[in-house]
Amino acid sequence: MNFMRLFTATAILALLAAPIVMDRYLVSVLVLVFWAAYVGQAWNVMMGFAGLLSLGHSLYVGLGAYTAAALFVHFGVSPLLGLFPAMAVCGVAAWCVGWLGFRFRIEGVYFALLTIAFAEVARIGFDHLAWTGAAGGFFLPVSRETASQWWNLRGGPEFFYYLSLAMALAALAICAKLRHSRLGYQWLATREDPEAARAIGINVTRARILSVLVSAAMTSLAGVFYAFYYNNLFAAQIFDMSRSIDVVLAPIIGGIGTLFGPIVGALILIPLGELLTGATRALGINFPGVKAIFYGFGLMIIIGLAPGGVWPAIARRLGLREDRT
Image 1 (spheres, rainbow, N blue to C red):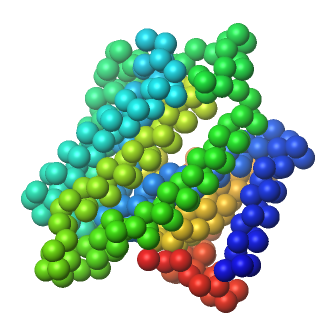
Image 2: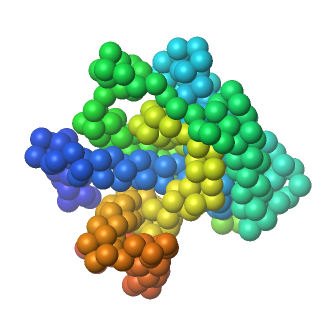
């Protein structure tokens, strides 16, 4: 445990100093790593803690992004304030998903299909909503006058680096607190055996809905960050199934149900994607789908070598106590 604390503290100090010695490209890659780690922690609350498979988390990324962006563009509301309506909108959507799923006992893969359906409905809806640009895209204004307005999430790569790092660390702390809370143990009980959990007095439906709400609220912040980092939104991209797959890959590769799994997964997947992009470009291999092919082979190798997740394998190798719930 002392080793882990020392390692964590050293890693945090190194990350805080990283932008001083790194160029802008590497800083931008780490921003994507932290974003993937954060949103992976949010998804892990549902799947890792409560055992609810969601393949439609792009719904909450998109709703959070569009809500905060629309309030900023049309009414001048700072994203620091727009975050709360974004969380509320995602909370309503999550409650609808949870109520429909648990009211009619939709579980397992069928619950996953329900989450996909909600994301698809949102994609089609925003693709035809003129108020947010419809299929032509929704663009946030950028100017030199607002370039240093941090309260409007305006700044350079270093600003977004430290913001994304803070989000990833906050998500780690929140998930650690939740996992060892009374609610966290209720999630564990409902994940392992819902009927046994009901028999000892746990309100399974309430516990599951709370996991969906917490996960959606956390993911909405990732959506707000996405909107103001890229400054443009396209419904066909942000609500797409591929976005949901990107969300789930980090915790799956790193280790579902663990605290460090999403972080380790993000540290593997994002640099792997960037390396493949550079390698295929250098080799002149540019036919459609080539990166996805190599990326898929890479994932197969990783999963084959560490089927339970990379972090649990590392923890066992180093003699550390696994943090899997």
